[in-house]
Length: 362
Image 1 (tube, rainbow, N blue to C red):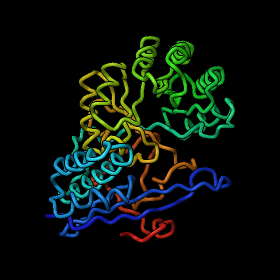
Image 2 (tube, helix red, strand yellow):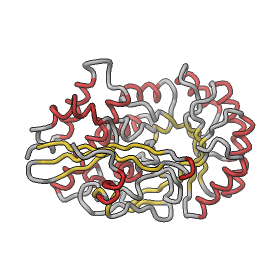
Image 3 (cartoon, one colour):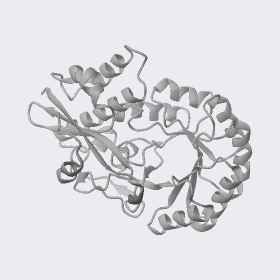
């Protein structure tokens, strides 16, 4: 079996409240084998596929995924290294290759990767992107997602004011009760001293994790300060795409939850390595990516230190996963049940794609 071609096109769809008029573009990919089997993926940079990676894959055996991943990764260092665009493209193609491999084997990807669990918990993500949302508004949305069946909810901090953050945490905890998990994403807005001080102030509200709490200018030093100030898990690393960068965050920063993005981290092949590295440091794996729970769930079902899968609930205007596939991807009562369908268990919804495609597949 050989890879015959790679087809890529871009869909542009509404993102956020309709009245905002914002759209977002997503490249989608089909890796086509010479026996007609097709693996699907999404994300990355189509130009990089055409210019760099297609020539490395076409004519190769798609089942040798580790070999193909390494060829792409090594090629990305020919210039200034595999930045975000290169790594997300490697990740998108890696996912398509695993989907193809699963279809060839007649097995779902989650089982091929390890198959530890057949269902994984999901946390509601996407709250707080609206900068005008008050602490009361945040707490109301947290409660809304609890009422939808989510046992864990995360909100995003857009205002660096520590007192606003504290009020949002206080009201959100009161809104959701004491028996569910509450997380906050600080988006790297604080230095280590302020982040450590706030971690202590958050203690009465029993946060499950504090995400990306510190600035990047001294990330590992600041992370260590926060780690020493709290019993709450310290999460981060969503933009770290290399195994060695994750090692630095674990060893020097004391990171406890590795959140490398499922695409930035190089797809399933890259994230499996990162999850194993995290496990060796008694840390957890919870990849970033509330827009692609249908991908992350396969990894989290396969690793022993996986925590939860993020997802923008289908009722929120910040997601695509409920529209992009057939059969529709499902999250029910705050969890994903993995199916026995081969590969990712999904195919693209061609009606949706034809409506929002900005160009024909190349």
